[in-house]
Length: 74
Image 1 (cartoon, rainbow, N blue to C red):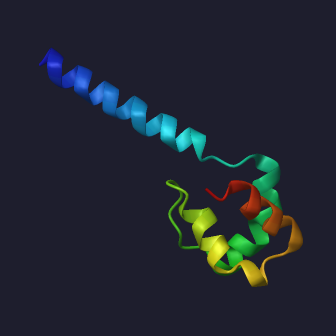
Image 2 (image 1 turned 120 degrees about the horizontal axis):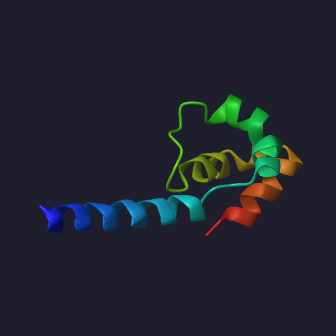
């Protein structure tokens, strides 16, 4: 039982650290909110999915959101 708890804790911590590394700041979120609402509303957050969605609509994004996408591309 202890081994299962340890494995679960390790998996949880690794998923949290990767999620936190991909979080955007409040200012970046604000810069892209209108574009997100327009193009990516149904996109589930995490794993860089929102940035990828926004990048797929890059030519239609506002200039502030383009800067956020450029800064967060991998």
